[in-house]
Image (cartoon, rainbow over the protein chains, first blue to last red):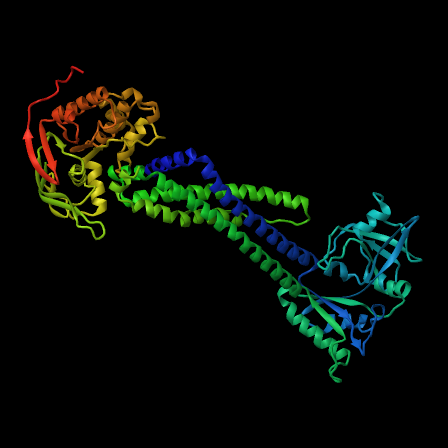
Length: 408
Length: 232
């Protein structure tokens, strides 16, 4: 009650000097808002990376065939002729690496596909049935192909959402015949929309067909481009990687001749960690720069409070004469600075949330401002008020009442 | 009620010789007395008032307030004593411009835990004849009314001693008289009042007149001359 009454005078004073107080609030609020927006953008970027990789599968290893090796200035193994991974390699990984729950060979290549008069370029993915589960695709329609169908080189296709939309619009594509190059395939399923993969490919712009059919009839090749190896969980990815590497080096007889790997293993978790770390250091950096503006806001509060204590000397003297202790005066002016800090913080959060929404709409950046961040922003602003209010408040409390009364 | 014994106070600025504001002051003020302290400016009147009001500490001597020695008390203890035992009235009122009359009067109550602050404030305002102005701000009041608000503020904690420093210095003579008769009224109701002034008019209405020159009491007379009250 008492402190509320004391604070009331402070509020009356602040209100009486609206312009001055709002300038201080502006500095403080804009500082909070900019920190909030920048950290929100950074955090949004981080979450997007995590989300992207999780939808791709954080427990996945990607074994890529061959490594482009420059030899005497020439590039060996141009992309179309990678020939180091086979379907047998994938089977061996599944069978012999206990850390790997499933390994799926994949060969994909761009191709033109057609339905009636409509043609569209897309990516043709030849693979085995576990692909859908390993890559976490779900169906919206129809079915996927079975292992038996794959072994029989059946010409069936499961369409990505984008391809289905382009070729069929709203029509039901099930049972229709599309042509991949010149080879006819029957549509048996449509995949759920998935978005963009961590390497930037549109995962909905593809069709999935049995590997054998793709290799023999479309690509005319014997080798696969890569193998997805799924670890039992995302924190078992590293031992799985070691086992796969060891196995492939043995199968490819690299150890005996002491040659380097003829394949490359990408650990998505590693990729994720790198990117997350990059976005975090970005956040930290911009956050640091923006914190400078918080400092500016703090100086705004400092100057308003200094002016206020100077102008109200006689009030301070009078309060002391009628019985205010030094700590009462200290508390009163700290309370005033605190009010400035909190108000600035709340305003800043409002402006920050609004600008984050605008930024999110105008750009493709997603922003993520958590409740914790909001609470931290207001708390920080309060702390700024306190820290920068301490000097003026101490000055006020240190006044000699006689001097203070005389100075008017 | 108040006893000063051999009180001295001097100020030193830089290398200049010390200025003796008060020298060997012996003073007793009884319960319910009304005294005027007069003297030329720079004579030490204000210092005496500051010492009596516990705003300043004497360098030497002994100050007893209601039989208690108050020298050597801490700042917080002095603040509490000022709050409960002393009411100040200043020449320039020192009202908070943005607070209402009642809020101004409540100010000393804020620094001691007291319930029903508003009731006490209203009673003090009534005592100075401003019961109907409680919600006015100082800017809406005349000079005399402002000083009455300040006097109400001095009364609100029911203090033993009311110290007034040139209470009519900023007021014209007609208004001054009404303020003086208010002090006399308070005195008649048993309050102890000490007025510091260089205004003869003011001094004349006190029953006791203490004359200070150069930090010393040069005369301390009891008089019976009073302005007849009720006439104004």
